[in-house]
Length: 359
Image (cartoon, rainbow, N blue to C red; front, top):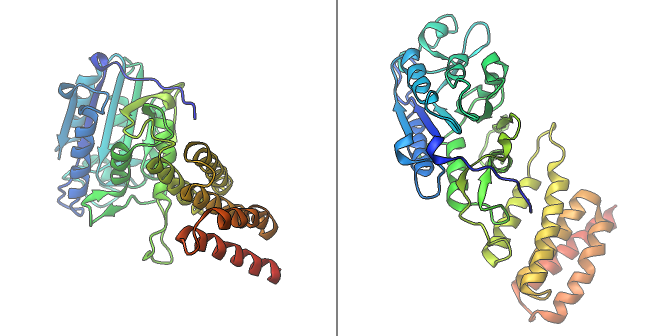
């Protein structure tokens, strides 16, 4: 997989990360602060693209003026990349515009404009000096920021669209968006480049966050992260990829297949391309396994079985059996009787034969 990547110049790049966890009139959100702190550690650590002294952390700012002044001071110094990240409550005014919660924000649309931070004010504070300006908003209704005039020249990555609420994970103590972003920083993308561009980060976040938990209520709405690029900002990479170079190792092949399974499971009416993309990914993983591990390796056969099953779900029984029946013959000749891989392949073939008979 080939990706064009732009890396920030550390000398001219700054990041301001803002988190509000303490509120007087809204529920407290310690998950926002925890997520921000861990993200700041990543940005300023060995895998990040910023000098530690140029990553600023702002926790529970009392006023919109304080936030705008902190960003503007950094914007005057940043020449390459300026990143601003907010985690906390997103609230809307009576006019439907996005505001970012502060400790004193009142939970009343009529009082939001005077007690919260207007998203447009945050975006305007980024100025025009930095070559690349990026805003990451981890809050409810974050997609509304794209309607702000000040967002026109800013790369936006938001946890949700205009109408949905961002989610928290009480078990991990993180926001769901922050949790998945940190997972990417930790685990990487095996078939990705040495540094992870924002376009690729957004794609993986979108797939991860679209998964429906097994215990989710019937009306569960998965968050849908949004992204809008400016010129080449989609190629901007803020982190190294810890999994780079592992695409054809056994762990890398398994991780790539797991991502394809998750993408196949995405059920968004406005994004019908996920299943065909997932089938194509499984085909690539299966082919890479055959080349790197050998055509008769148990993992190669397991991945070929997964690909054949996915083809059937997309195109029907005949397409599945055209791939799976020859695979079953090959597996029976190569794998020991009673092996779990052989049993799985046989079970898959029987399942598709049963579907074919019922058609």
